[in-house]
Image (cartoon, rainbow, N blue to C red; front, side, top):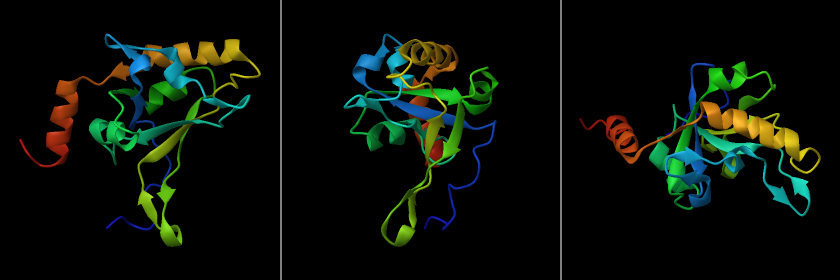
Length: 152
């Protein structure tokens, strides 16, 4: 059972987060900057970019939670915060019935520039995140998944 307040604690600099990648965002182990640009709907950008905390979710689980995305990228939170752009990561656990947390690992990449109001700044910030992001290989994903499940 998930603890009632599990996932609401601050995201620490030592943590790693995962971003599920669409096929178009992951080409030959290269991550496309679009993976870190806030999505636009009807000329309005979402507030943040959705990610998952490694302490709660494996790369595989991250991919599968979002309609089975084909790949995932990892980012070290301390390196995100070291960027001189004000980008940060905040917890955003998903609550179910009766406000009980059912997905403690969900988090948000926040303070990204608005791609509608300033596409150049949004693209620059995304390019800086790509520089510190790492593609999670299938071998790494499998190893992490086995270790998390207790199999060696």
